Amino acid sequence: VADMIAAAFLRPRLARALPCGRVASLRVRAVHGDSTDDALRRRFGELTDLADAGLGARPLFATDEWFATADNLLKQSPPIFDPDAFCIQGKVMDGWETRRRRTPGHDWCVIKLGLPGCVHGLEIDTAHFTGNQVPACRVFAAEIPEDPSDDVDEDAWIQGAARDTLGEQGTKASDEQIAAAESACKAVGPWHELLPLTPLRPGYGGDTGESIHRFAVPAHLAGKRVTHLRLNQHPDGGIARLRAWGVASVDFGTTLDPARVGAIDLLSMLHGARALGCSNRHYGEPRNLLRPGRGENMGSGWETARNPNRPPVLARDEETGFVKMPGVFDWCVLRLGAQAQAIEELRIDTHHFRGNYPESVIVEACNEPNTSSKALLTMGATLGDQTSLPAVDWKTLLTRTRLGPNAEHVFKAGVDFDGAGIGEVTHVRVSIFPDGGLMRVRAIGKAARALPETSPDDIMG
Image: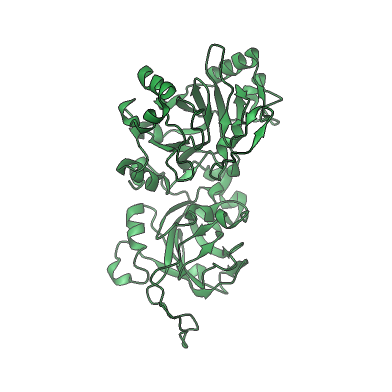
C-alpha cells in the first residue's frame, strides 16, 4: 500500500493507470472502462445515492476546508471546472480540498446520510483534481441512532466538536475540535470499514467519467443499516464527489403506515422507492423520477435519446389519434417504497420538457413482491406481449394517454383509471412514446405492507 501511495505522489500519470484491484483485494475494484466498472455502473443504476444533498445529506465535521468545502462532495450535479476561477485561497475547485498538510495526521470528515440505509457500493470521483487529488482514502460507516431524549438536535453526539465555520472556505478545525470529534466517533459505537486504504487516480477525464472510482461493498457489510459515513483522506488533497449507492431503510410504522400517514407518494425516494432499470438513459437516470420537488432543469429528470426506430415521415393513426409508431417506445420499471393497497392517483410531470416531452404514455402495474429485478426488466422489453410473459402479470393502469409540455398531468382513480380493479401494486412500468423526457412520476396510495428487504444478491450485476 505504501508503495502505491508513493507512486501516486511521485508519478501521478503512471498511478492513474494502475489497477486498484492490486490493493485490498477483499473488495471489488473497478478501473474506468473495464468490465467490472461497467457491471458496477449498471448495478449502481438500480440503487439510491444515500449521500445525496438533495435528500438531506450533509457534513457534520471536517478537519480542513481551505480550498473547497466538504458539502461539495454531496452535490447531485457532476463536478465542473473553470480554469480562470481563483480566489484568495487559491484555485476554485468543485469538491472538497484541504490545504497541503504540514502537521502530523491526515484530513477526514463525517457525513450524515440523507436517508438511512444499506450501502451496496461507493463512487469516489477525483474529477479535475489532476495534481492535487487525494492519493488514497478510506471509508467507514456507522449506525448512530437518534437520542429520543433530545428533542432539539439529533446531531448532539458530535456537538462537542462543532465548528461555527463548517462549510466556510479557508477554515479548519482546531486541534481540540479534532480530538473531540475523534472521541465522539469512538463513543457512538462501531464503525465498519466499507473501503480499506485505497489509492486514487488523478482526475483526468473529469468530463467523461474517467475520474470515477467504483467499489462494491462486501455482502456482509452491504446488509448493515447505517446512518453516517466517515471519509478519510490520506493524507490530504481533493475529492470532487462521494456517492453511497444503496437501499433506503424506511420504518413502516413511522413513515408508511396508513393509520399514521394516510395516502402518500409511494414512488418517492423518501419513502424507499427505487428505479430498477430502463430501455435508455442517454440524458438522465430514471431514479430522478422519484426525487422530491419538481426539479431545477431538464437534467433533473429522466430523458432518453431520440428513438432511432421512428418512421422517416410521421403519420397520424386516424382511429387512435396518436402518431403511428408501432413498437417504438422507451420504458422504465419503478419499485414502490411499499406494497400499495391500490393506486389512488397518478401524477406524470413534464416540467421543463417543452420541445422534448413524450407524445403519450402508458402506465402498467404488477403485484410481484418476490420477483427479481432481472425478471421485471426482462419483461419490460416486450410491452403488451402478455402471452409470452407468464412470470410477471403486468396490468394496464393508465391506457395510452397524450401528454403536453412543461405540465403536471394528474390522473384520478375511478375517473381516469381503475385503481381498485388493479388492486395491490408493488411495481409500475412507465412507457413513453416514442421517446423524450419526464421530470417526475408520483403514485399516491395507502401502503398495505412493507416489501421484502433487498439483499445484495437481488441487485442485478
